[in-house]
Image (spheres, one colour):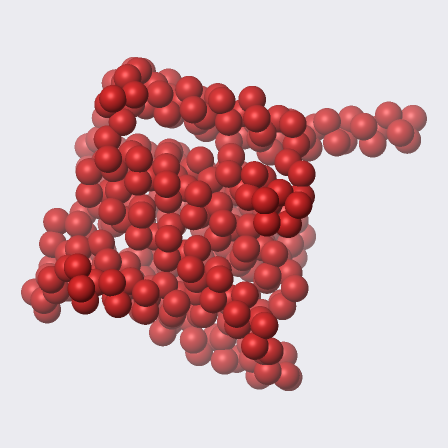
Length: 299
């Protein structure tokens, strides 16, 4: 698979996730976030498991304990991102959640340097300020208007950034994208349902009322899109993956307007625009400068 093909795969994953925001938001009318996340990823794990077993047979040798330990770490980051995003959707809009979650593009290079000592490009710092300005405008130009759900969405962006960095790092080493996917899904499902037992009521009626949303995010938004993410990340860099995956903000805003009738004031749209520009600049500018430097060296 070429890098262009990999990036298109990641773009498809982002479109699926954009639609998932709507399902995640409407499901909160009938079921709590922990049980929703737990059942969602349990379905995803079951759906991916047969393909992971086929991958295992094709590899010809079993995965070592260190590989499963690394997959478990990805699952911890996935749980952090999924549950904080779901809690946030209880008190914020799909549009706000999708754009604020997209801030992981800013956090990815920062986490890369913290975990693997990969220095981010200097453009990350002014872009981070631009993104903060976008958040300010998205909140109506008043910090006090940042809702609890918005704060959870920003927090979840940190976990998604960790998941992207760790998934890209470990899948390139193990070459077992389906085993990684199944393990991270199962880890997330077990943790979410374990928490749900103690903090949320659950009933067959609640599951039945939100079954369509659960099946969509379980089979499509989780089972398919996250597998596409892991496969695509084998052939591209974490920052490039982040920029293509961040287009879920645009898809989420589009689907939120289409299915939920969500609208933003002019200042809010300006904030969304600044956040998306920040997402693009953090990837495009380093690439342009890199190509220009190579051209000068070859001249």
